[in-house]
Length: 336
Image 1 (cartoon, rainbow, N blue to C red):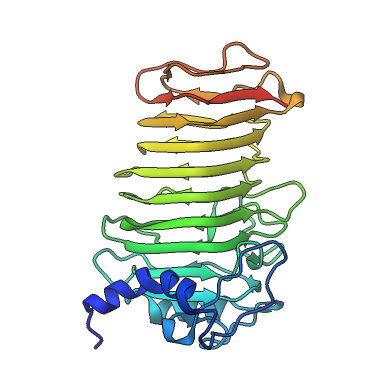
Image 2: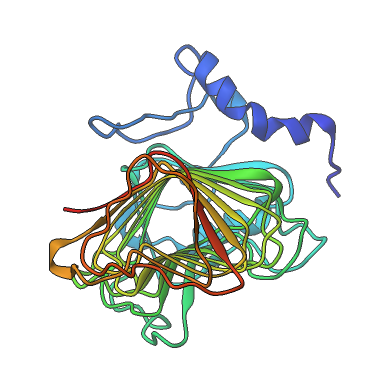
């Protein structure tokens, strides 16, 4: 059996630094053509990343079902601080890919790294069986489905998850990490013109965090982001657009969000309990929904802000006794 070591523990941390330092001069892992205007993340073969095409036979051609190849890579590489590398392409899938659900096990210590956010698309098949019931949701890519506080060192970077068309029960991405781990430069979206889907980014795993999420965009779904109980959760540069019921739904986490951008006809934030600290936010209410409240919260406290503009209904927040939203300077709510 393999044994953990200090060097194995540091390998994933040093991977990106190694790429930046030497990928221009050393032989590289196979990658696809760069996306115009986008990042182009490639690695030297000595970096130790696991190329999902070279090693596990995923095609990324938008036609072949890559579910089994990706799941096999997860099953064999999780627990060892390995990075699964996805060259640009569309990886068609037909079911959930899951790191695991067992506490104190190998179901952790894995990174998903794309060549570019716009160029790597993990796409659910249209009208996919198992995703047709909006009341019985099913995840596309999951980093954990159990409840634990030791799902350490989980990363998702530079890729897009697309739940396709005709999948009302789809949850795009469930992210979970503890102590170390992050998600950044990720898009979760729907191809369906009606934007029908359950949840974009699911952060509801019990005992989430500490964890960091940066430069994430969620387009469509009933809810853009949903949370559960957590140790702590920090998000920065989060964009949510075109949700059907609500934007950010907090149901049990202590959350800090910097630079939340919302363009919606529905509430940008619904805070059922615990607290949200919000700074530098721009919450745009579309002109066709002037009476829509920007927030729903069991309790609301507003710290001094530079500008807070409310269009439509003047009573744009509920007051209660459990949760609170605290907003700091440069937080704006405007009508487009």
